[in-house]
Length: 526
Image 1 (cartoon, one colour):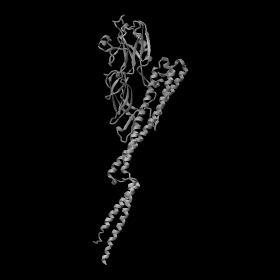
Image 2 (spheres, helix red, strand yellow):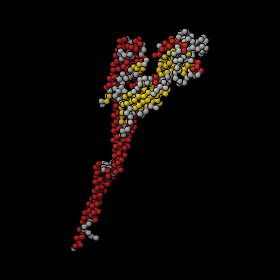
Image 3 (cartoon, rainbow, N blue to C red):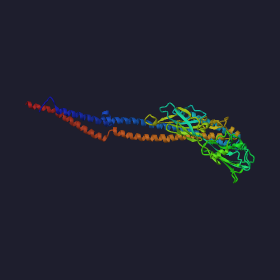
Image 4 (cartoon, one colour):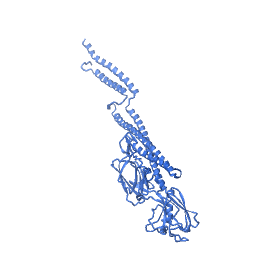
């Protein structure tokens, strides 16, 4: 068969040559870009998963950068807090030195006061000037904003973390379920069965008692006939040394008196021991009792019926008692109690509240509610923007007017009250002979700064660093996966390039032969 209008071998050769040229172009493109997938047609399914991985990698890469920046913010904040802690320790040392009034002159105490004033001013200055890239760190700019806190229910609120996802504000409900209690021991005011009769609210023979509390131990000796009112005065005059107070029952001295711990909570205790007590425990009717179990303090407004309370088991004989921490529900979750303070730490809410005595000691009181409306420092630590990959932390102001809040006689005093002319200055403490409140303020301020540094350190170590390592591992694995999907295998591609080059050369030669084949018909024309 010899036809000249259609050269089928040439058509076949052209088709194969086109395929060889396309193969050659593909190999050259992959070798020049280093990618196996350059266009969707190279591998549609591979392109889809590769693009998704690329998106994940970009998010993870930025998450790592966000974590590193957050760590820098935390490190800067903690460095400033370290200086504040050093200044507080300096103030503590100066106040302890000033309390040594028998070995320093008024001029020395004045010099100490000047140093204290300067240190307090420096703390406030650090609070106002600590910044990171224009972001104020310690002036309360990163603290949470609250609304509706009733001072009759909550004396101080510290919000550490709150999530506002799907909420414009976070509602916080606090409901007391078990009352905070001071430690307490009751002393009977009238024991008719004693011999001699023990009544009329007075000591019947010389008695020495040892009083122990959270602050220390004191022994007091009372002569025969000393009234219970005088015992109360003597005990209260040494409260700073023992941490124990005393008061008459409302029925008066003949009703008896109660020894109480100065503060609430399981860390507080009262121990009253009669030194050298005779073998006969009924001598002079000396009888101490405590409330049985964890029952609330009995109401003695209508008189204190000792016999009925003892017979009912409401009072049991004891010479030591321990206080009780408040228990409260915060948004339905049982909070951790310590004295009058409750705290909760969850992924959506972390806070610490100092409850007012009225709320903390009355489980029947109406629950109090307030709102966290805004604030805090939000860190985006993951590749996706959602609540599970965001962490919020609050950093309150460390100005002297905010640190060391301590309740004393119904008033709240802060670090600034230690400055000259203020209620807890060295001059006022020396004049009153009582450095207790000043010492409590300094200790509370030191605890607050230490706690804040601890929280920031835990955040950096347990959140930022672990998150960074996790993201870095994910970045490495996803990069390897993307490389396997999208990157060109140079060994394979070079071998395929050689094949394509050979096929192109042979295809060109074959096409030339196919085109020459039609000329053979000329021989038939003679």
